[in-house]
Length: 154
Image 1: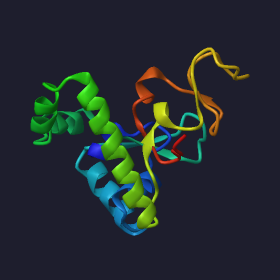
Image 2: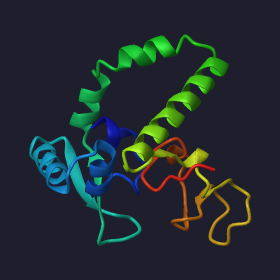
Image 3: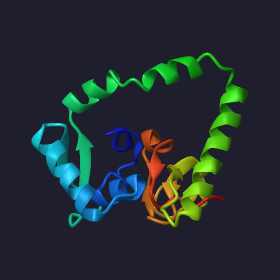
C-alpha cells in the first residue's frame, strides 16, 4: 500500500505494483484481489485509457497508512535541514536505481526528476501545465513528486 500511496496515477496499476515489488504478475494480482476484498483498494478505469485499471487506496487504507511505523523515520527526517535532505534523497534514489539496473528491474523515480518532465510554460502543444512528454499528458501538481514506473533519469 505504501507504493500505491506514493505512485502517480499512471503507475498505480497491477503491473506497476509488480515491477516495484519485484514479484510475478500472479502474486501482484492476488495481492490486489485480497486488498480489494479487505476494502483497502478500489479498481477504477484509467482517466486516459479505459482499458487500463487504476488502483486507488480507500479511506480505510489511508487511515492504516497514517499509523504506519515508517512514519517514525519521516518524523526524525523532518528535523534535518533541507540541504541534508536533498543530498540524502539524491543518494538514496541513485543507489536504488543502480540496484534495480543491476538486477534487471524497473527503475522508478519521480516526475520532477525524469527526462520526460516538461515544466509549466515549456513549449508543449497540448497544455501549459507541467507535463509528461512520454505519455503526452498534463500532470497534476500532486503527481510531480510521485513515483513513476516509466521514469528515466536525465
